[in-house]
Image (cartoon, rainbow, N blue to C red; front, side, top):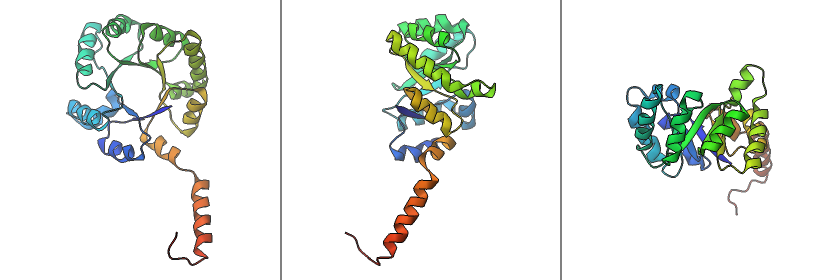
Length: 219
């Protein structure tokens, strides 16, 4: 399973890339807007930092023709850019055309197995089911991941399931158990997933027991 960070904060990315477990980045207009009035420069920084990992960059145009043109421009920013496009019926022809032209896409705001199936048929690289958005209306978002895994495997599609809108570590655990190919995490969720109080308690106990020996150098 790959782990992506869902942020455009370059300082955060520089810090956590050191862990060695981050495989890519997802951005969206909301978090990219925090970069100020130079979003293109920020994307270039991120793609340079993650030369060997996918970086999702979302379209902002709404008209299909303008979206198609913008998607090509976004894809041209760097070889590891993946164009994010919402899974809306009006954009299916755009997604189809881009897929035929070999543009890597991450189709976002996927909420049903039917939507996912159609995107898989178009041959997109990723589908991003939004787990947390389902939970907001009291529907089990993790259950959708299990359904998508079964569907993709049953038909032998190559599209990868990218679990998105993960709000807490329980969502990450659910995505892992569901067999999602990728989980994209907000930095705060990633930090919580790194640690556990019982790990800290165990280290404290080991250190205390070792200190009783009074050994200054080991081995």
